[in-house]
Image 1 (tube, rainbow, N blue to C red):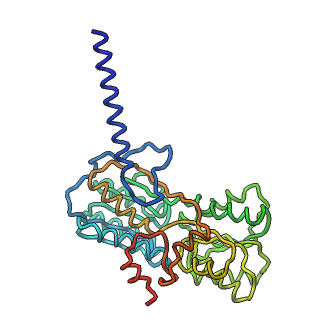
Image 2: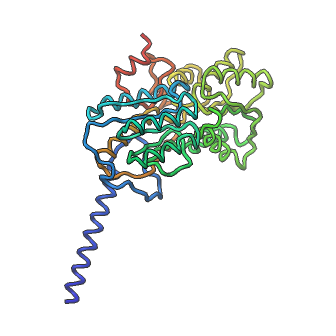
Image 3: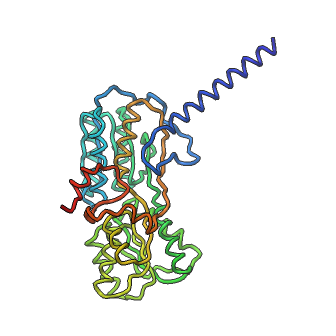
Amino acid sequence: MVSTLRKTALAFALAASTVLSATSAFADDVKLMDGITPREGDTEIVAADKYKKEAPWVIGMSHFGVNANTWTVQMAHDAEAAAKLDKRISKFILLDANIDQAKQVSDIEDLVAQKVDAIIVTPLTATSADAGIKKAIAAGIPVIVHTGRTETQDFTLDIQGGAEHFGKVMGDWLVKELGGKGNIWVLRGLPGHPEDINRYNGLLQALKGTEVKIIAEDAGSWQYDNGKKVCETFYLNNPQVDGIWSSGADMTRACVDVFKQFGAAIPPISGEGNNGFFGQWIADGFKSISAEYGPEQGAAAIRAAVALLEGKEMHKRYVYNPPGWDLDKVKKYYRADLSANAWFPTSLSEEDLQKYYGNK
């Protein structure tokens, strides 16, 4: 009798283990984007069928600022294209906060009032979306957050490009290039944006314990024109610099153009996955690294929303921490037939790439 009970208990344990393993594997089966993986050590799971809903679906997106820079424009294109590709999505509503915190608050409330089936949020600040996220969750609407962190943890699912990782990849490379000592300029992104704060923290981690010193620092807001003004000011104040840490490729392009404008040698400078920057790097041969932060994250958020509405089990937190690109990899992605405003990696079709970024 005891033996029979033990066998039954063992069989039950094995069956339970199999179910748990299968469930975990099921969550891992969802492909959001190359390089995006569940956050290590995080065990929180969004249960299967929690947000399952019959199609057609309406998906809303609260974007902190579509026209903030060329990257944010393409991220919106990537999201729109992914939504259009899935015929079960009857409508994709994209609301642009235009770098206005109050507008983002009202945008999310508007999407909740429209009773959309899922909401994607790219927060302007760490708190700009918190109240809206709580209202959406209370209304039974799943919320996917990406491209910026929130203070609230009430979201359904979070996909974060590791901003500290991004900044540290560039910082570590710069420290190595300079042999652990020297003076650098720092071009930061949009003031107050979580991505800017955390990328900068990644740089500080890389500089800790070294003799690399920041001698000039300002915000170029991830834009070419603002970045050029900042670099021109730095150069006119003191052109003697050993390296440049730039938080975004549009600003990198601007700095490279400033040095060429003054006929000066281009110091080691960090870059990002932007076609215009790729072209500069290939043509001018300066020392650089391309940190990866693809606009395909917009499409990844659509895929996450679809997976939740399909009833798939998901991890609550995902990370995107790819290694930096060297010149050989950049040459494989560079497209001479596309404008400087195209970004990689992207899931846009060739037709869309030519439509939005073709040189013809």
